[in-house]
Amino acid sequence: SCDGGEWDVIVVGSGPGGIVTADRMSEAGKKVLLLEQGGPSYFVTGGHARPGWLNGTELSRVDVPGLYKSIFTITDGDLMCKPDVVNAYQACTIGGATAVNAGLFFQPPASDWDQYFPVGWKNEDMQSAIEKVRSKQPSTDNPSQDGKRYLQSGFEAAKQWLVKGAGYAEVGLNDGPSDHSKSKVFGHPIWNYEGGQRSGPVKTYLQSALKRSNFAFQSGTKVHRVLRDGDVAIGVAAQCKSAANATTNICLKKGGQVILSAGALLSPQLLMWSGIGDPAALTNLSTSGLLTQSPQDWINNTAVGDKVFDNPNTFIELQSASVSSYEYNYSNPVAADRDLYVKSRSGPYTFGSQTSAFWDFIPQAGNGTHAIGCQGTIDSAGFGNYTANGTMTLNVYGTSGLHSTGRVSLDAKGIALPAANFYADPRDAAAIATFIHGIFAKLPAGLTPLNVARNATLAQLTTWVSTFSPYTMGNVQHWSSSCRLEACVDADAKVVGMSNLFVVDASIVPPLTVNPVMGIMIAAERAVERILALGGYE
Ligand SMILES: Cc1cc2nc3c(=O)[nH]c(=O)nc-3n(C[C@H](O)[C@H](O)[C@H](O)COP(=O)(O)OP(=O)(O)OC[C@H]3O[C@@H](n4cnc5c(N)ncnc54)[C@H](O)[C@@H]3O)c2cc1C
View 1: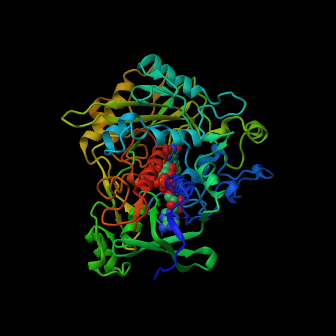
View 2: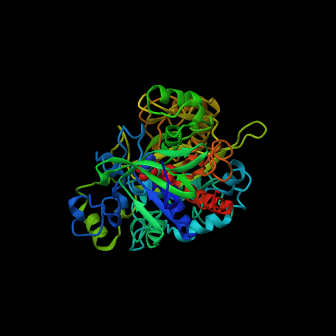
View 3: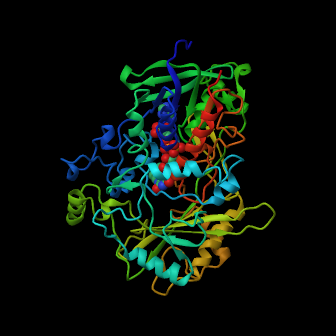
């Protein structure tokens, strides 16, 4: 059903994984088609949704970093995925979640590659991929174009506490030493912004791809499944908005490749809808009529969707007389801040509300058990019941080395559903509580925690972080690790059981010590190096 295809490579999904992959495959001379189900986001993609104060500019709401929070508090179905697409808070738009996220852009420490990635993906193997991302994707810790730092009262209070009190080193968080260790370090956040505006792969890699005649990009096109002839992908079945939502087959050239970059929840869903996965899950899909292939045509791969991860989140509300809280406003910003932004890309709207970040590792007992990474990010305002002036929010994430993971399953309609409980292993809550207990021991008198006691014991903190409340057990939508290297895909990112089908996105990235985007982009660069080295499929 798929003869005469013209594409060497079809990439599904325009998040950071898909855009980096499609750009580099087209740079290598392949005829590449990038498909995205969503529509415009940044102004440069044709996105025009914005508050009135941006009228007359070449900015959409996506371009302005300070509108980050209101992008996802204002209900607007254009950017976020609908419930009939995925059962989680994900972006369905050009750029994927990089069009709606906070832009935090931290380089994973060398220990992440060395401890959690397979042979061929260790720190020394990753150097060219790291360099490619660092040289192509701008980032900054000082985004305001007038060179001044804004909203620094929270930064100063945190520095007093963590650097002067708790012995953290203040560093440039993506600077050397060459291992980029995230051990007891504190600093200004790094964002992938440029010129006071949101940057990210849409503004960099996608723009270079679009200049090539052998690259095509089609948004508004939702892929339903990969078309296969046994273990050979021959194309994709997709529904195009521009063609009255008709389903068409988009075909590969013989010897071509399909690369799924639909994100850590939707790439496993696409695999299962294509008859690749755990037979139990495929049986359910088949029973509900969503999978029409007969069982003898299924590809048995029980690692599809297995060990999905998100950073468990704890909000600690802190109050100090020295802190001035700052609330961003979508339609009616403080006039001086609005003018600073519109006239000179300066002021608080040049970043997405975080004022500082820090990390430490909590050692784990036992052979071969790695230390657990913990990250703190401090926001410019309070949250929940604690929003009086002087309040700021510390987000504590558990990161690399956590013991608990989940599984992506499909609901009755075949839509991806991530497992929810990330504290199933008690060592995880204990590690996160140890991190909080350690820094609380150094809390200065003038900085008061509001939603948990300053002198809580380690046992009390362990119970608190593992009990549901508006401040604890949160998901932060950093889904990853659902189609792991050397399990679901091999070390070339090729789906186990298939000849020419790959997954390159957060799915193949194990839990990182830092927010995932920079690591995903680096992993995509590395995956492309390895896919190109395989040569074409014959
Ligand atoms: C609110 C929020 C804030 C965040 N903040 C940060 C941050 O500050 N820093 C950071 O590092 N990370 C952050 N993250 C996480 C980060 O953005 C994601 O981990 C990352 O974007 C995942 O990249 P990806 O390429 O795997 O997939 P995604 O970014 O999810 O992109 C996948 C794309 O594929 C498309 N797609 C899916 N299925 C199909 C289909 N069947 N057909 C066609 N297209 C399809 C989707 O529409 C989407 O555009 C945040 C995430 C969210 C939601």
